[in-house]
Length: 226
Image: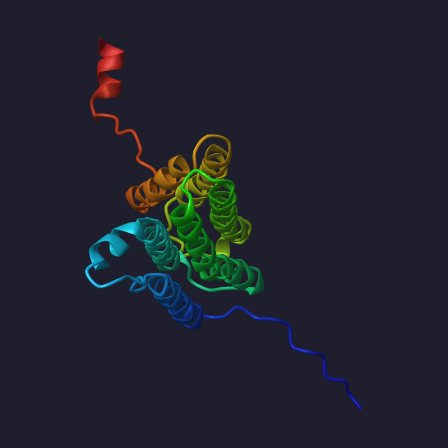
């Protein structure tokens, strides 16, 4: 009687992973919106109450921008990925894990800053946010590491610099968020918030890759004849 061996994990199409990922991104953004609420106030005090919860608005802008550029970069990645293996599925799930977690430190930062923008709790809160945001960047490092070791998962026409640029951007983000957290703890929490708001701009600008220096076509000719 012949034994049946368990079937190994085979490569799969990207469709289900992309659909599931888009759903997680949509839920993550929805959770961020839930941090914005009608503040308790006395009659005639709505304007002041709304202004008083400014940390919630800053947190929403920072985190929405971060999730937005993650979605954009995720889309850019899957334009280039042809098939997935178990390692790439795991890296993608790690990325989604950190994305879904982002609403938690956003709410903690908003509450702490509203209570005391310079207090000890605000410093702990920005450190928490920075740690989770840096972990999200490291999830991208794992993602790019997997496709660098398995180039057959990519479309044959992918740019030679795509993976290298992606890893550089991911490491840069991890270091920048870590530095922002230290800045918030050691100097002022609001400085860290400013970095949290600005970093998604960097990721948006570089979503198509890092800018490359262009050399004029006749530069080499001038160097030889000049």
